[in-house]
Image (cartoon, rainbow, N blue to C red; front, side, top):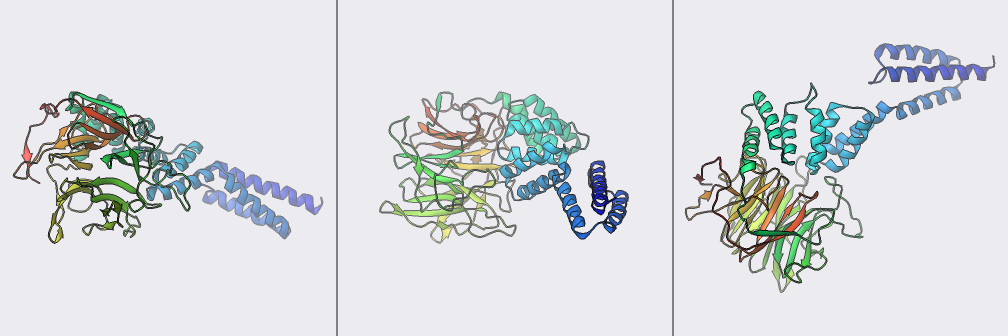
Amino acid sequence: MRGEDRCSIHFGIFLYLISLNFSANGDGISAKSGQQVNFVFKSICASMNKITCFYALWMAALLWAVDPLAAQTKAAKRADVLYKASHFAEAAKWYEEALSQKASLGIMMRLANCYRMTNRYEEAAQLYAQIVQHKRARPESWLYYAETLMYQARYEEALKWVSQYQQIAPDDARAKLLERACLAAPHIKPLYPNMSVRPFLWNSPADEFSPVFFDHGLVFTSDRSQGLRLLKEKSGWTGREYLQLWYAQRIDDTTFTEPRLYDTRLNELNRHCGMASFTADGSEAFFTRNSHIAARNGAYHMQLYRAVRVGGKWKQAECLPFCSPQYNYMHPAVTADGQRLFFVSDKGGGVGGTDIWMVQRTEKGWSRPINLRSVNTPAHEAFPFVDAHGRLFFCSKGHPGLGGFDVFVSQRDIQGTWSLPKNLGPPVNSPFDDITFFLSADGVQGAFASSRYGNDDIFLFKISSAPTSQASHPAEKDVKQTP
């Protein structure tokens, strides 16, 4: 037999053994089979010239690269890196690819979390429905499944999984809040029964939220396409553009011009900018923007910024002095006179995940932040707004609601006591995320955002009568507490 033929046969045997051992062991070559392949490899190489041996090694590496299980591992590892960096939209794509190769409980769980964090609740619910049937599923997945069922108004099913979770973790505050929501949801009544609602005509396939009537138009936040901009990047969390402030001039009560990017002194390229709040005289703007300083964990957290308008032009914005790059400070809501500022933060000393805080303007600057403990819950509170009468509207996942974020209102009395928050009910609230409520100074018109049709969209409303006095929490007593 010629040397070339002998090498070809040996080369074929070598590749066969490699493929056989890879297919037999999902985690790669076992210790025993590895020794066998190593022995055959040495024997074959002894009868192969250097060039043929090189190609053997090259082909073995190629087989490793195209092996389905190796491909899954590669996709999963890349997804894990993105997941840890909170790039949930990008991570979801790689987890989907890894899951298409082979079913894995861990990958299913992380993919479901990605769906949940990017408002893809229907897809999340479908995955959780499979996860909770698995013997090795973590009990916490039962709670997440219940949460996604709430988004579909499947309250009885959600309550079943919450109850099952409570048998294992009876003291978990999150489960108690979710149980209250499941029981209260069917009984929540409209606080504004005579409210007419219509979608903003310039909503896009992206997110639009935080609407504010200002400068004879509407200022809002969106990650819609900004068009061609040099050095523009995309957000890893959503896979879309970075959030920016937009403006649409009002034509009449129902019509606005096509939105354009708002002032460049408030917006900044490749950084989230948005959620603006303005003083009544229009001289000050407070908004949220990513910090320029990285936190210890490497994240560029949201911070509060203030800009002053002089001669009709905004001056360069400055970060408020009580902010820290180690935490998120966001969602500002300034009172009409500019003397109080409400905001949201996950800083230490809070009640739950994200809490509402308040600072007072003094002669020496801003006071120390005060936590609104009577309003906050162990879950998340967000997007405060203070109307002309001093009522605090905000969003919460902790107070009993219809699902996701609901909008609530609380009134502060002369002693500084905040009333028990009331759920606004339909048509403002729905089983989906309903956020960023805004009411005009006359209390007749306003806007809010909701994910009831998919991504966050803006809805405009008009109120034809005063709100009802009926409480929206039939299972709770109307108690009052101080901050």
